[in-house]
Length: 373
Image (cartoon, rainbow, N blue to C red; front, side, top):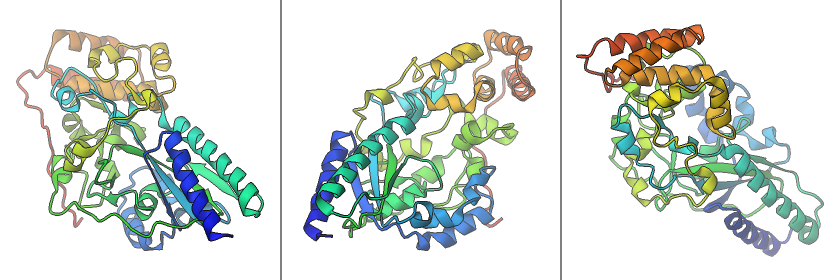
């Protein structure tokens, strides 16, 4: 293949990406062999919690060509998602309001980004057939799906460095962005320059975590993470984590919100990522009063829907238990007990105990576990 044609295609991909709303593109060979020891150690310690799928298809995670045959390059994309004027800190300090992770306030990013990547992939195919004379390339878009280690791939592609909170940080964009990839059989020129890690001695993200989910820098114990507990976790939320959850009912952004590099983050221009149904300012009790039909209607097209109505109530019950004692909250919790699952009932009982202890002082943070265990 002509080097000049491949360079031309690379520049075209960057232009197409901008047209589709992406802020940056990078290309890597995708060799993740160096990630294997750390990934194996993470799994061995059980830091993936109940996400058993993380332990499956390990070989495919570490070798893109095994996941999608004939892959020679991984094209990594990033898209900003931080909505404007959502006042994270103000909501977290308002104990009767519900805090929903900023990425989940609008429409589900999976479909939006996958559709955009598919359009770019089609243009790549058209270019290849017209200018490269190699036939149709083999390609596949991914968005936080299948066994893809998207963060290491993004770092290798030059989209940023891995922060101590395990998220990708770009020095001019912070970390409030989604990632997506196109695996391709075309041997595009790769990014030779990697972004230097500039976390330095800062450990703000580690120290702010309410549940101390980081046993050490660059390592997340998912089983202690509020995002896992409120989203991926299908069962009961362990009692030790309920008070530190506060009013966080879907995900947690503390480690990003405190990161000094996020002062450079830009607000998203995608209106689909802007808050819907006032989820950025809703009262806990109002959301808890939704019936299942309202939940399904108001979370249509939202990442929130996938946790289901009962787990939504579970999370909100914990939030109400952490709210200041009030007769209306106690009455609402009692009313819901007759029309919910055993799982939700258990969390309502806990919340009622909290509400009936008006002089209690909520534990906002729990003691860090011994990382050597």
